[in-house]
Structure formats: structure tokens, C-alpha cells
Length: 287
Image (tube, rainbow, N blue to C red):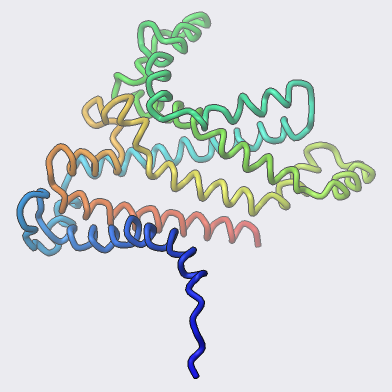
């Protein structure tokens, strides 16, 4: 006799599994197929083999986009991690204003990307921007944060740091609240100062959390798009472009879906390799 199958569990799982397969898994295979074709959405795809990937290797705009995103990674990721950890340490102490600081530090992360971009366009405006007006008070001349090829990467990075800081802060704060209090108290009794407690107890206990924040921030920065799109449209002269913005313009504006799909595959492996390298060094540092 065959046992009857209880389909109840499968029905509940299907509410997640079916949309995930349709909207996450199938597009990966479809995008991979399209990357080997020349296709402008109308008409039938034309098989071109590896030509799209060869074009990426010779496309100076693609090179510039990947070069820019490496700058974003080197500037944004360590800054967000360090500042997020410092702010979390401050709030975790329970000092005056720590409660309101929790809201202030996290609130930017809840703001929509379009709002963030518009607000920071005003803050970073060359002539009337809030930041330049304050810098002028201390004798620093106006800086063209988002209109100069020399400064635009810094302008986008500052905006991204302000926006991304909230998530890193809240994750660090949650991790700090799980640090065993008895270890801290024992260190105090043994005469350890604040720095010694931080370096020898808090940071080692927080290492998995630090690794998580680093990984999430690295992936987020490599996928940077909204700030670039809203604030500069990749300009001036492509100086602030990113891989995803380059993919967007080639797919939507130029209708080169085969090339855009190939660039997406390249970006996927680029993110994967950098993430694995970072995880390797974190693991080695922990040994």
C-alpha cells in the first residue's frame, strides 16, 4: 500500500518557491542565454557566441565603470564599517542622548533613494550647497562635488556613506548587546582600560558581526546605482558611472540586451570573486 502524500506543506512552500523560481532563478538562466545573443527585445535573438564578452573587454565605458566601483568600494566600505561601529559603541554605552542618537543614526537608511539623491544634490551644490557654505566659513573655496570629474566620486561616496550607515550601525548595535557583560566586568576588575576591553574582548566577540557587515556593505557598494542615477546620470563624462548604471544605459537606452546581459554576468562573477577574497582575508585574520 502506498502512503498518501500530505500536500499541505508543499502548498505553503509554493507561495514562496514558485515566485522565487519565476522571478529569481529563471531570469538567471534566461539572462545567461541572452548574453550569447544580439537582441534588441524586438525580433528574434541572434546567436553571436562570446562577442558580447569580447566587446566588454574593449569597451572603455565598461572599464571606467568597473574602475569607479573599485574606488567606491575602497572609500565607502571601510568608512561605513568604522563609523557604524563607533556610533554603535556610543549608543550602547547608554550615555545621554544615546536614545535619540539611535533614531538619528538609523533614519537615513529608511529614506527612499530618490529622496536621498535630491537632498544631497542640494547639499553638495557648488554655489548654494549647504556643505560648501560651511566650508567657506573655514576658508575652503567652493568644491564642485558633483560637477567635476575630479570630485564627483567623492560626492557620490559621501552620499552613499550617509545612506548606508544606518544598516551597519543597527547590526553592530545588536551585536554589541550580545557581548557577555560578565567578561566586561571581569576585565574592569582586572584593571583593563576602555581600549583594552575594546581590543581584547569586544572586537574578538564581534568578529562574526564585523564580517557580516563587511560582506553586506561590499555587495551593496558593488551594486551602487540609485545615487548615480538620481544625482549625476553617470556624469560628468562617465566619471561617476557604475557597472549597474552602465548595464542600465546599454539595455534601456541603447536596446543592447545581449551586451547588457553579458555585463551582468561579468558583474556577478566580479562581486563573487571580491566577496570570496574578502572573506578569505577575514578568515585568515581570525586565525
